[in-house]
Length: 406
Ligand SMILES: Cc1cc2nc3c(=O)[nH]c(=O)nc-3n(C[C@H](O)[C@H](O)[C@H](O)COP(=O)(O)OP(=O)(O)OC[C@H]3O[C@@H](n4cnc5c(N)ncnc54)[C@H](O)[C@@H]3O)c2cc1C
Image (cartoon, rainbow, N blue to C red):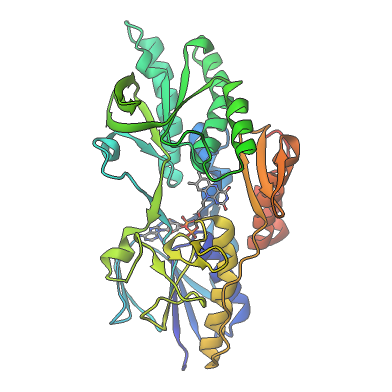
């Protein structure tokens, strides 16, 4: 290939790691790399629940792209991808158009609302820095309003989290830590604040080891979280939610419904005409799209099967980062004109879910269960390891988590 144009869409875990790897692996006289992202910063999606609860400032979570990407080697464009035309090898941006020889799609996820009435308009989602910051400010606003208004409106102090999966549980843990601070700041009696989780399954963290799920629930309950399991959200209005449990509908007054019960791939994939499964491109083992030898999909945009279990790998940052290694290696092979393409083989270390800053659970290293402090420490190691990998010691020192209880 003669000086191919390599275009990477999205600077999330998968996209930015691909760019960082390629800038080291490729000779810039022999290819051009362009990275496109909506914002001029990369953010760690896995920390957004902390920003949303207000337990960690969002500036800790975002990293200026120019701090990790060498702009002498990678052309960085801040713009919004509107559509992809794979038959013409073109990407339409809000402010222009790009031609590519090789494309990497790393546009991440969107929240799935499953057509539940009112959810899209009235609920909050933990999706990016802007939405997380909005939740933090909205929480504060409602505590302030509770004290300011004449009639005491309980809806201001009821916080409902939809979904008891990984994101929902991690957010509940942060809320449980944040609420006592808010109560102190706004002179609110902690006993009247309600943090309520609504989960359709009979337990939170379905799919996790039951002992870990039980531990998570009792840790959160001991800090005031209420669980309504086996319940389906029917509607979300701006000042209340309606759910159904055991065939009976009930209402909870609330101005704060945070929906954390499902993600899907960025809708651009579907709209651009790629063959997809529930919005994701089911990639070949070398991470390329089925019909296009010049298009790679990565992270939450890619569906790749675990051939041992015949189930898709879950959408995680851990997998997105590992896929970047395969994608970068395979792009190098295409640029060199060889067919030495690697197959993606994840090296899964397990999963650790935080339950606030001082508790966590983990299922790691082939079903070893971790609880409490050990899991808390492991979670920080995972976070810090990513920073080291992305931007070296300098980035780790600037953004790393070193205080165990912070
Ligand atoms: C609160 C929370 C906690 C999580 N915790 C964990 C965890 O502990 N461990 C774990 O492994 N996974 C976790 N996950 C899942 C993990 O964050 C995702 O799987 C991961 O972010 C996927 O990486 P990605 O590169 O595919 O996309 P993302 O990291 O989502 O990045 C997508 C990028 O594309 C950009 N973009 C999107 N649309 C456009 C557009 N139209 N134009 C230009 N740019 C665009 C975005 O700005 C973003 O930079 C968590 C998720 C959430 C929400």
